[in-house]
Length: 101
View 1 (cartoon, rainbow, N blue to C red):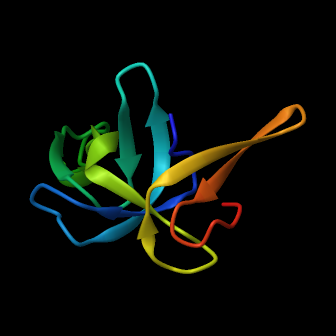
View 2: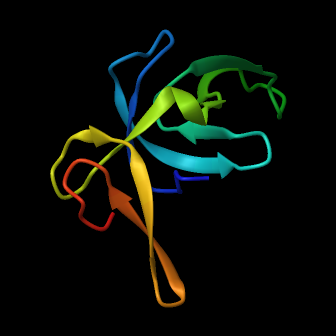
View 3: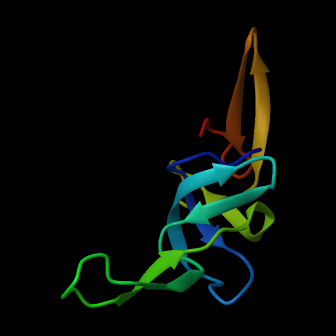
């Protein structure tokens, strides 16, 4: 998977199109990501103790990784991710500025 935790991404499709956020969690087997402040879901929570009130919590839901584009930290543009093999290391590169991500 080309996206990793703590990457800054731009959402390309869906109800949150055009928003930016940081990746909180990656699910490579399902090819999905969890992005901060994107695809918010409401969860109703019961009171845990007596006398406490129940509440509604907004929490992010996961989205498809293909719906997000990486924002290059060097040039600041949304870009595709390429790979370059250097000896034994495989690094990610920005397809727009050809710099290491």
